[in-house]
Amino acid sequence: MLFRLCQFFVHSLVEQPDAVKIDRIETERVDIFFLHVGKEDRGRVLGKGGRTIGALRTFLETVAEGLGREVVVEIID
Image 1 (cartoon, rainbow, N blue to C red):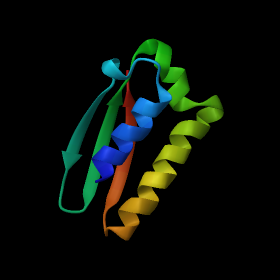
Image 2 (image 1 turned 90 degrees about the horizontal axis):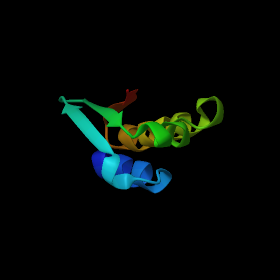
Image 3 (image 1 turned 30 degrees about the horizontal axis):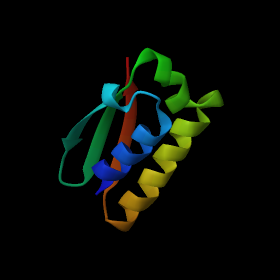
Image 4 (image 1 turned 45 degrees about the vertical axis):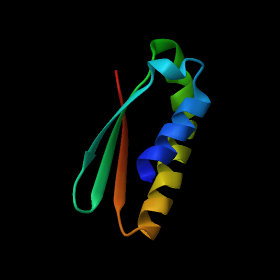
């Protein structure tokens, strides 16, 4: 569920959704998402001052907490 939410929001933000790749590591309690986006879309995902990625992290953390899980979201160059 968390993966699909992350995927939905990131694809909604970028201009080239086909260039988006999300790698996931899943443990018993933690989901770690590594976002790979095109150079031209990196700014869209980060947002001004990191606000967009911060909002995405906060949203996913809130949903994960309700599921008894934790989530980490990182953008990879």
